[in-house]
Length: 349
View 1 (cartoon, one colour):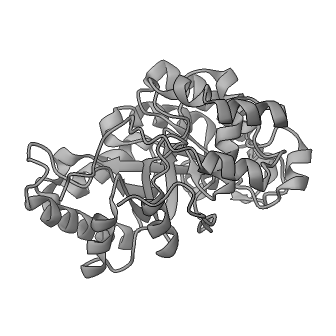
View 2 (tube, one colour):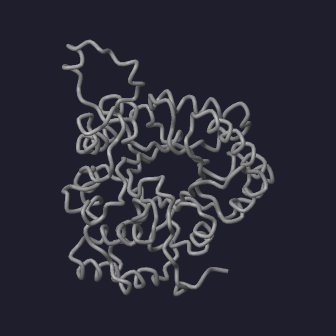
């Protein structure tokens, strides 16, 4: 039974370990990755001249999320690192690595060439802490986790050209080529998670999470996980508010990561033309997209909107200098449409 659309939902209180606003890279290939990430990283404040021995300074520095200092004066708690969300199945990790190599100091400082001439000519780079990398293990690599999980993570590290990944997720609560009601899914979820825990303990992964998990998938983890996932990434927008799943995550201290936060590529126009959202956009003198992202932000969600256009990227960033009122938030909360636009994990046992 679904939670009533007028049930009061309290905002979540995320761990603050994951930047609140990131960049989704689904269906972004080499040229798009280079354009979007190069733009973002070139506008990031934490260049080497703003760091202390490679360690990022406090968020009071001018961050890529904020085009001017007025944003920071209003929101000093906002994240200072760039969250980049990828996955093995996206087939773009190596392109992300190419951009990171250009803009980010991915190597241990002691490995740097200390020749003065080279130091002068070398392009200033951001510290590793200025990017927050997310990747995911695909269903096909969950068939035999003890053999495939380590190799999949090793491949991601090599393609990103880093020593560790900040957040690693199980992409889907089932392995491939099996019916949704096959009991093997529970076994591979367990075995995959336990292998990921080993890699986290070795320092190759910093945080672990899941994606597309329903409540029952999360609840079963209490039987075998050393700790619950830091995050659950799932489809979440005004036309699919997932109230029960959100409340479970809030109650269990799991960060909510919203993919397709504006709706899918095919459904975004429908969401952004909703009369409630359009009216609120007029009231606050913002675009409908900014209203939806602000709604998600005030609910405490981590947002990973995807775009191939720099102008859209800039629009998505401009959500920190205004607030939605309690009435405006409740108006969006009360939208009754239930339309799943992406993948449906609800039938997976």
